[in-house]
Structures are given as structure tokens and as C-alpha cells.
Image (tube, rainbow, N blue to C red):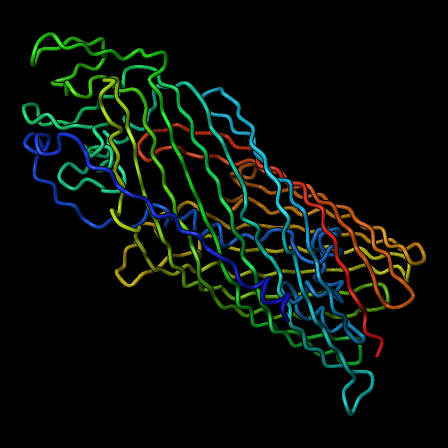
Length: 532
């Protein structure tokens, strides 16, 4: 029981940030229009969040991982509870199993012609399962089966770094947002830029401008670090009718723990921006974009850092139904259906900014939103339903081949809240996403007490066939299993996942990065098979 407690519970650490006083705010507000500061929905809540919790990884027992997850008709594995629960009906007696892994993850990001690699490693949990099967009282050829399983269906830990020289700066993007939201600056974005003197307002011309010269090339870096997981706790029941027809259902309680930190930094490349005072109020500068006025105590822009941090926690519920038919000794076919999962989630978020200027006596201009211990926002996400068809070819006790096809319509994702804030986001989802098609193939070959395995898993693009190359996740895998004479067994698996995705850095600019993600996972499972 202690193991289960460790697996299910996760700690979330939320950093408390302090805000320094800003220089010249009193004088600056005289030049500015009267701002109506409104509460904005946390920028992290969008269609990307819905997609994050709508795609499964290849996680489970090491046997399941090694065979690409193609267990829709193979069955007799604890991971079936999270996919096709009718596969639990193929257990004669049941087993208890625990799986862990070592994951090496990384990415290679290309933006503006510059490539930057990132990598990391982490020990992690994969699966725990307790399955018990017994004969029915009136028919010894039929069986009942119950199972308690916890499966990691998504591993959300990764890191991405972007570096380049560019004119597409955060100052330019904030300026465009400020012009659109002239009297309603977003306090988590362009409002921070204004408070930290990256932006200012010229009351004579009625426009915003930036102390970072938007006409010049700047050095830019962005780091995106994420950690987290979705663990699915399933309570399952399966029934085997004369060992030929199998039915199963699982009530799933997925639990989300997720954290994301995005740090965007920019530098005045080679100190190309210069401002010099020519008296009390006069000044000269080499700015390409002319400045209407300057602050003597600040002078020219040097560098800036903008940080977006949030954690997400919560849970959901779903139902999984499945059936499998043993057509003959050589062929099994299966089908399953997953209802949508409705997650109830809470985000804790914090935005902060720091800007430095060339005057050696100036202090770093800092701001954060919200100003105290961060903000909290609760909302719901509904993931799309899933439908799968499966087949398994059985070659006696020598080999088995499994093939699964799965369809899920990502148009049916949605976000919801008590204040109805996500109408626009849901409209984007309906127009941007399409039907996704997933394929899983797995093979197992038996050599006495040694089991050799291989698999392939393809998660199709959530944007449809017309954009088939974008966001397709491919995973190849292999493994080995060893059974001992005392009913213990050990399984090992290695898998390699790779995918390519587009990433847009800004809301108003077209700057796009191409990111190649990859992960190598080494999995191990220990288990004990019941014999009565």
C-alpha cells in the first residue's frame, strides 16, 4: 500500500516572487492614458492545453511498451485496463506487476536558421497492476476478472531551447498588442512591458513606442521546461464466456500534475542601441525607430527577461468499454470505446518581467502579475472519445502478432468555465483540428522461457491527413521477457519516440520554430503470476 501512496501522490512547488518598486512611475503615469486593467484568463489555457491531455503516450508494462501497445486483441496484460478492458478476461488467474523506467528526453529547435539542442533524463513510474480472475460458479469454462491498475498514460516532461538573432522581438509583439488593447493592457503581458519601461506611451502622437529599438537585430533566447504526468487509475471488471467471448469495462480516474516554465530573454546585440544626454532634457540616439523622449536615469535598452510560470493539477473521470472474440485458435478480434474524459483543473500562475538599461546607476526594472502570490483559475477540459478495432494472429505457443487501429476526433475537444471565457478557444479548436488516426503493431516470439518482442506505434496528426507530417508521433520499440519456474517474471523494453512540431513564439508575429522532439525510454517490469 505504501508503494501505491508514493505513486499516486505528487508534490507541487509554487515559487513566491517579490516585486521591486519601479522608478519614475509617477512621472510616467502623467504621460499615459487612463488604463482600465481587467482580469485576463491565464494565457496557458488554450487549445494546446486541450491537446496535451488528449493524446496518450506508449506507457504501461514493459511487455506492452515493447510491443507498441498493440494489445487490443492480445489481452492478458494489466495495461489492457487503460485501453481495451476486455483483454483482462483472457487471464486464467491473474497477476501482480510493477513497472518503472528511465527516460532520456530531448529536442532540437530551429528558428530563424539557428539550431539549438536540449536534453535531460528522469527516472519514472510506468504501471502498477493487480489482476484477479476466477471461474464462475455454474460454468467452469467461464471466468470473472477484477483489476486495480494505475498506468501512466502521458509523460509530460521535456525541455526546449530556442536561440537566434532576429528583428522579431518581444517588444514588437507587445507593441502590437498594446495598440490593439490601447486602454486595456493585458497586465500579464504588454502591461508588464509598460510597467518595466520596455514600452512607453507618447501622449502627443497617441501611440506606444519601445526603448528596445524594434528596427535593429537583437539576440533572443527562449527556454521551455515542462514536467508532469497523467496517471490513470482504473477499476475494472471483465467476463470471459467459455473462453471465447470477452467483455470488459473500466472506470478511469485520471490525475493531472503539470508544471511549465517559459523564460524569454533578449539582449541588445553588441550594444548597438545608444542614447546620450545633451543637457537636462536634450538627447541624441542612434535608434532606427525614433524616440519621442527618454529617461535620463535609464537611457538605452540593454536586455530583458519575461517569464511565464504555471502549474496545473486536477482530475477527471471516464468509462472504457471493450469486447474481444476468439474466432478460432489462430485469430482474435476486438473493439473498444472510451468516453470523453472531463477534467476539472486548477491553474496557479505567475508572470514576471525584468528590464535593464545602459545607465550604470539604474536599477533593474521589475514587475510581476499578479503582484502577490500568483493567481488561481479553475476550468474544465473535455477530451475526445476514442474508438478502436484490433486483431491478433496466434501461431500456437510460438508467436503472436497484434494490430490495433484507433480513431479520435480532436475537433470534439473543448474547454469550459463558469464565466464562459472559452467560446473563442473552442471555435479555434473546431476549425483547427481534425480526425486523428492511430496505428499500433506488436510481435512476440517465444524461445522456451525467453520472449522476444518488437513493436511500432504511430499517433497520427491531430490536424488531419492534409497535415499528416506535422505532430505525427512515431515510436519504435523492442524488448525481452524472462519467466522463472517459481511464477516470477522480468520484462525489459527499450523504445524510441520522435516527432516534429511547429511552435509559434508570439501572438502577433509569424515567427515559427520547427522543433524535433525525441525520447529514449528503458523500461523494466517485475511481476508474479497467480496459478490458482
